[in-house]
Length: 344
Image (cartoon, rainbow, N blue to C red):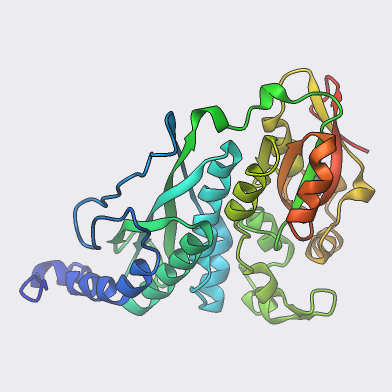
């Protein structure tokens, strides 16, 4: 296919369209591994086709999310490791839409590069496919754009877009949240995909990428391995819980940390009260705070601190939730307050 499609002049300008065709051939098996029964199209069309099964969803609502990976990509460049960064790309979108109770259906990715390297693109898409399988959604298309002069040699940008569906009557309803409800923490796998501009500054990674190879006993691994740990995807955990208990609200703890994200799930007049000693802070955050002499408030307002998702549930159902998700715990409670978040 496309064996007669090439342009000598375009190649002289830095774009070889044949590399794009090679990349597509390499990624096909990864994309196909994500296909669910609703997929009606193969890779290569002008649009991805997906047939929704709405037999159990009388009032369907589409929920869409889009995001990128941010400067975590610079660590993938430095380590020349590209097979997990796609998981982060998927996670950043699907973890957002699940905060409404919506099940991701399809995902699209966008990869922009200065020079298209087919095997590198395959590794990126391999990670995207893994993320899609973790979220139980289909990767039905995307775009790989070769743009010489816009990106430095060996660098690329990666973004994604997710469409999810939720029954209107089952959207998480934060208007039902009352004083006394509890916050359940679902643990993170590490930094996820936020705060890396500060991380890079603290460890001077732009000037000394070799610092990524330093082994830290408290981490049990090198700094690079820790920082590239993929973002945890919470779709299956949250949907499973929603079938058994009433989830009133959910917060994906991304950029802005606790202070920005937890209040987004609360109605006016109510706040969250959390005791710092109850937060199960992962070792990487203690290392960051010590290494960078970062104020405690800044830590909680930048990083997830070991909490990737917060669910708000009735106190009576909290124990059931803890029994269903490994590592989950009670983070705090909802209080009547004019303060959105009290960190005691």
